[in-house]
Amino acid sequence: MTKLPLVIVAWDDAWTNELGVSVTRYTCSQGTVNIVRKRYWNDSADLRGAGFLVDMNNVKMCVAPGRDAVINDNIQQPDADKVEGEFLSEFTQEVRQEATHARMAGVTG
Image (cartoon, rainbow, N blue to C red; front, side, top):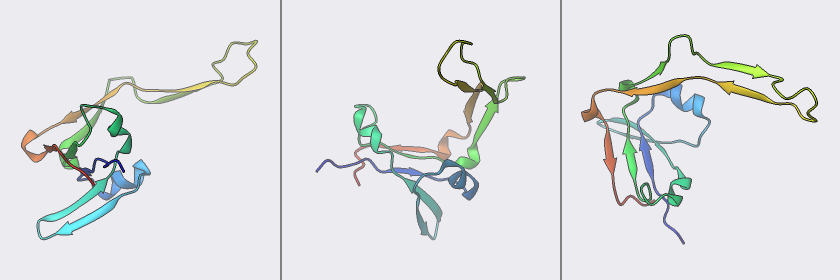
């Protein structure tokens, strides 16, 4: 059986509710860490066995000015036998305070 990577992410409750992923919560005297597995990372030689600890209090979503998310419906060609739409946005993640995050190697679960 293949060992799967274990990814540890420190999310607050607002993030875990939005992502719709299975979360295991680990609580100790230093605080709470939510654990999320990313099984498809096994397909990447760079990410296989990797784990990340991310302090979401130091991660911010930044949207390009005037480029907030939009939903464009019915963008198919007039003679198409289908319905097309798209979700379009330009954003990035700003990661601050590098010392509050960590990368782990050789993680199995």
